[in-house]
Length: 144
Image (cartoon, rainbow, N blue to C red; front, side, top):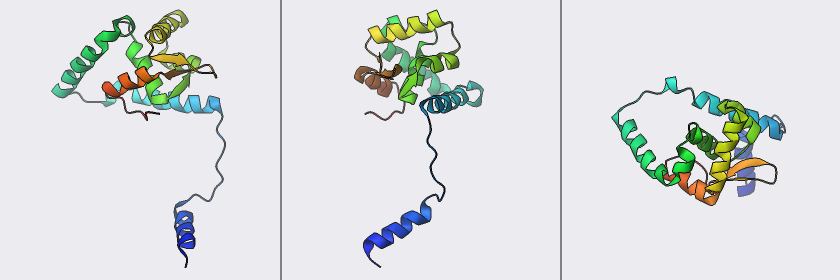
């Protein structure tokens, strides 16, 4: 059996026989929001002393962006954007559950601090500086 035939046989052995369904943009946002909502169920996590030290370190990193992260829910919004890659602002505000004016004020502060930008599709995404900050505070994202 030739190499290509062996490779094809192995790939078929692990592949799915059902056709892949197309997922729309709104469906992707809903899946991301559902996943983040489960992740934000903080009662599932146990804390220890290293978590306190990690929080103190994160606070010191975020001091440079006091105008953004001095606001309640800012870190939750930033984390959500970092984990999602790009996300619809309305869908994200549905997860954060803040009044529109509060949410918009936080996002505007992130834009002014060059951490977030609005994509052509009107979604929120991290800038290069935002991705760098996310990496510094330990958010697992795929740096593009």
